Amino acid sequence: MNRAEILDTAKSYVTQDRASQHGDMEDNFKNIETAWYWWDSIKPDDLPVGMDCAIKMTLLKISRISSNPNHIDNWIDGCGYLACGGELTKDG
Image 1 (cartoon, one colour):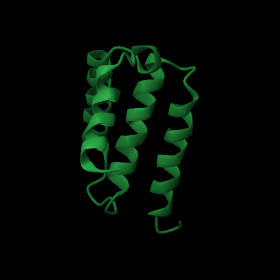
Image 2: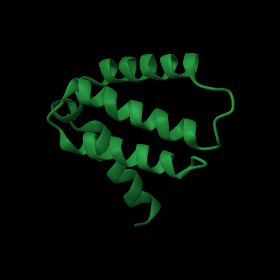
Image 3: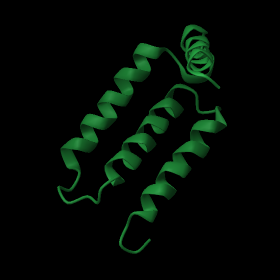
């Protein structure tokens, strides 16, 4: 894909109604922000690089599950982010 096609695809994603899959956009952003704020308030200071991102992306998926628990992609993606984060552990 060239850049124009990428931008056209992105535009089609963000301008169509995705509320049936992910819930109301503003509610989702609020839920995600709340989850990330909570995590930032309890996370250890010495997390390995990348682990914070894996956890926050998992929390994003959990926030989306709260809007639509029947959308299987969020469950799968959440597991995927946890698995990626798990590889970053010293035991991984």
